[in-house]
Length: 308
Image: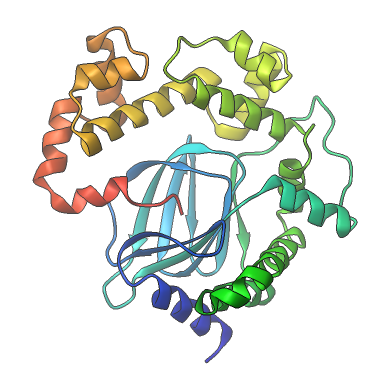
């Protein structure tokens, strides 16, 4: 069995049903889908995503990113996107390994490897939060070794951190070096944007206050707007609204909450405004969207589909 076949077989072995499968190894998640999906509004977290089989498309702002076994996706911040599995079948399901990024682990590895060049100057905006890089045999080998440990939990406790470091090291050796360094450096512009995102997520149900968010990020409001949009493709206000609407949709579809209560819980004082903005993002007002969701059982996977 060659390396690509083993990589595919291991994901299929440990993800036997469609959906998201957190594994016994910290930060490692496996994903399976046996048919193409509808476009799904979801939240991507900071992660590297490696597809073994099938194909997926992600839309962030005006950018469209398609990835498969030939290229992997790197997401540097938590980001509302539209994701869609575009190639999958019961015979050849979509299979993906997702490794969440831990800044502390990254930082220690970068220092040990002697890759700690200074971060970009304060006035230089970081690049978009999502990018694609070419898969290499070395990355496939490292990912396969990490997956093998799922079969031996006793070994995994000791060896998984080493396998994770190897996989990150291989990514650092390619096109993702600058992006991963930005995640690791506490004072980088990307880490400042990440702090702003954390504050927006923490306070998403409160009135939007750009000055408070800029202060949490250690930026001026104008610098925050510039760097935030460079990373996410959205202004901080647009990001906050997208996040609130996605949370309200989850409450309506997953918990059966009525539209007025869901809108109020995420900070909307006006039900009519909430309904308008909900329909603009999701294509239908809340109750019509919920009825469509209940009428189509396959759509229920939308809320369970992972971000990879």
